[in-house]
Length: 331
Image 1 (spheres, rainbow, N blue to C red):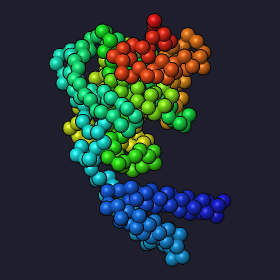
Image 2: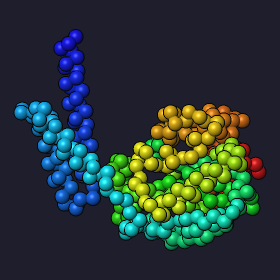
Image 3: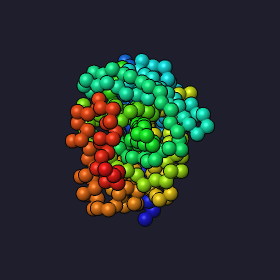
Image 4: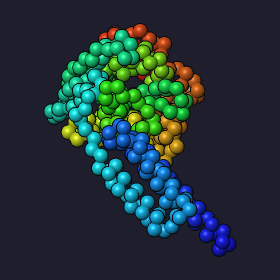
């Protein structure tokens, strides 16, 4: 028993140190060091770590040395500062912000791009005043882009009189930069909240990216809807003043999904579908947060809006047309 315990302890420590070495190497590789230095520095750190942990002369002293170097890498990584001043792609170059005046809010820089293709577009913005007392509904937009278990989530807020505004939590990419789920763990992107017209955010995904888009009406009280709406706007204003890093695990479109903390769903934070968020609509169905008048498979089939959204992204009635006849949304 004693020998087995010693063997287990020894290999557990080695595995833990190896995981730290792997993370440190990747953190250096995806860092703000000059590009030519990154692979060399990451390789030196990685090889040195392997020698310290598994080498012929590995000892407590060499492992302590590794821990000191790793701590230095970690501190340096933690002090990497996000910025609002980079050579941004045009669609995320201008940040939205909100101005509060009593019961009304003026949202500045609501995006409504005129797309000719996914990468060819004219960026347009407008300001709009919303009376928060007229907020009548919140809808979940669920976008499947290739991997069934992973999706992109957005929230649309609809006001009396037809005004709809949508929030999408995304990476703020620089010109020439592509999104990578892997890089999203290593402070490669700043976090941004895109505030946009549905003709932009939904139209882009249906007509130009050809992704599968589902639209669900959430069963929320007016008070909760306003609370979530205000929470998003406060974060929007905060990001304008103080940028933050995007993180694929802790700060992404689903961990920032405020509805998940609603009263009807007190233990959502423990639900595995907040990670495999392609199934978040199933989770909300089980909790009674979306229409439950039919089997979930039928609801999902009827909530797919691709056919009705095709080719109408230039229409001023886009938001009305994609909702007409959807479950829980009336005629």
